[in-house]
Image 1 (tube, rainbow, N blue to C red):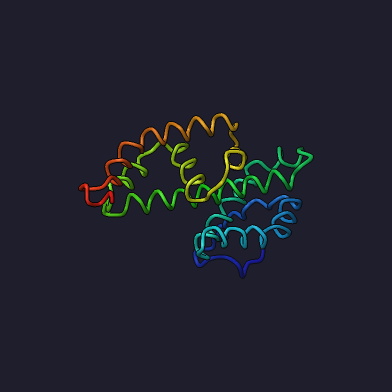
Image 2 (cartoon, rainbow, N blue to C red):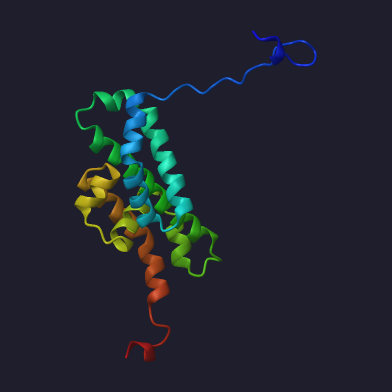
Length: 175
């Protein structure tokens, strides 16, 4: 070791550990897909900050499963599915937080925000995203019958509140 690199007390400086290098194939996959993933996320999430956060989480998830993904004959399809799940999770999670943060302007919003995660996701994708059961099942990785079950359960929980909050106050309002 070169003597001019020693600290004042004569000891060699402790080098910071370098992060492990990423697999070359992963880096290539990242470079190939990062822009498309970001544009998709930006379209869905509407802000650059949320899009960057989601894409970063997506690539961390892909890296975590990289060895298994490499063995899959549909690498691109599988990584796209991971990206979509992360972005949909960010979208739905943001909506849930927004509903909970509101001053509960309606009892319906408060009830919606308290639904179990799958019921909430299905309601949002059906009634806000206007997706059909087949597409919701594909997005969420569920069977169509499971989506139908969660949709029915969510509607059962929301129905009494919806009826209370949307019925006319007096008979004059019904005309």
